[in-house]
Amino acid sequence: MAQVSARIANLAISETLAMSQKSNELKAQGINVINLSVGEPDFFTPDHIKEAAKKAIDDNFSFYSPVPGYMSLRQAISRKLETENGLSFKPEQIICSGGAKQAVCNAVLSVVDPGDQVIIPAPCWVSYIEMVKLAEGESYVIHTNIEQDFKITPEELEAAINPKTKAIILCAPSNPTGSVYSREELKALADVLAKYPNIIIISDEIYEHINYVGKHESIAQFENVKERVVIVNGVSKAYAMTGWRLGWMAAPQWVVAACNKLQGQYTSGASSISQKAAEAAYNGDQRCVEEMRQAFMRRRDLIVKLASDIEGFKVNKPEGAFYLFPECSYYFGKSYDGRTINSSADLAMFLLEVGHVACVGGLAFEAPNYIRFSYATSDENIVEAMRRVKESLAKLK
Image (tube, rainbow, N blue to C red; front, side):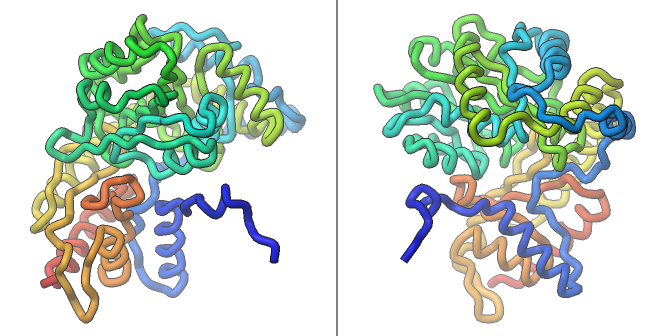
């Protein structure tokens, strides 16, 4: 009997997308579900970006784009990196993809051979480990906890490196924790990595602009490692353009050439219209980015305050992104109405079915004692969702 390849059979389903789908199914039954499971700004794409997309359609940007993206967009990204980040990347060192997710996967597939190890600090985004699996590599996970604000230390990094280590994937601001590495913390990690010239550093910076502690810091700023850093970013989070599917990579020339070859064989260039919209995002007024950041910061303060009042939750104050990641193991072993909570996945399902709040259990993020709430929603939804969570959890005995 015909069957799927082992490559696909071994792949896990994205837990964040699965929970979002389950909440949509309940909504379709007429149940009022508040969805805090998906990492997506609830704002509309700013008008000047939408206008640029409409103009691109009228100007007949309807043909295949170059595989790495239009030169005008890559020049805009190059300028953004120079002016905002103080980083020098030529347009030829930039490749645009169908979302930052594809850019990360391109990087992994381009540098990881079967048996190579990739260091992944955890809690980590659900797709990193699966991408390493696709490349037939092995993930070496460094587990952290809420007491250390979910950040790895130089000592932990050094201990994880071995002769099979090929890459590390860093994400800051982080999904799912919202943790942000300071310049000093990044420098300490860079100083460790500088001793191992064969390790590629994939730096996922998609949440760059959703930062509550000042200027974004990139590990690419340090001279001793910059020739090995692959920056991944995009327009989804900062400009509320998740559905436009436009991400990019700025990297050493040889990595970009490899990704260009790979992308040329399986997707070709990203959407022409999305590229022209992204160009307007980078070249246009940046006030929209700051307005959204301010709203996210207000919501962060709100959800931290409300979640801190929930018995059994251990809560920290995230410094970026739009996630809260409380420790919830207090509820393991407790029961209500014939159902027992044995894991954070059970707890997430309980909150969905009993409290009608969608969130994601931490196992998907390599953190089984935690649970993720996205606060990329209205203040009213946050207040009501936390009320429901508190009320539902109080039923567990």
